[in-house]
Amino acid sequence: MIASRKADPSARSYTTRLLASGAEGAGAKVTEEAGELVRAACEETDERVVSEAADLVYHMLVLLACRDVPFGLVETELARRFGVSGLDEKAARAAAPKGPST
Image (cartoon, rainbow, N blue to C red):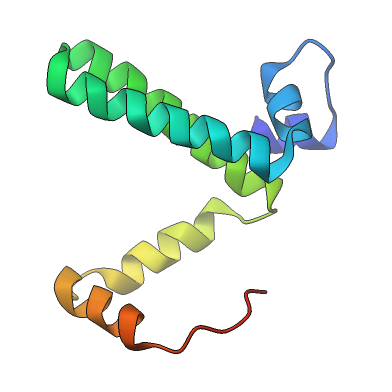
């Protein structure tokens, strides 16, 4: 659906508007929704947690689409990390030299 809106924008579509806001606008929504999810997890019902989690995932997918990054690459990265200690993986990232992003 997100790719469809990107390829064929609709003036009456929230997704189209969010895509038009670019990575900055979509990123701001990801930040907002992440905060709402955390608040819901700490203070609200499971139903609210599910709702806010869905909002966060949707906005993350739109942000990826703004950058033309397929979700499959995220899945591949998660699969690569499977079976690797999160602590070891994080330490390896911290030790790696930082270069320009492509």
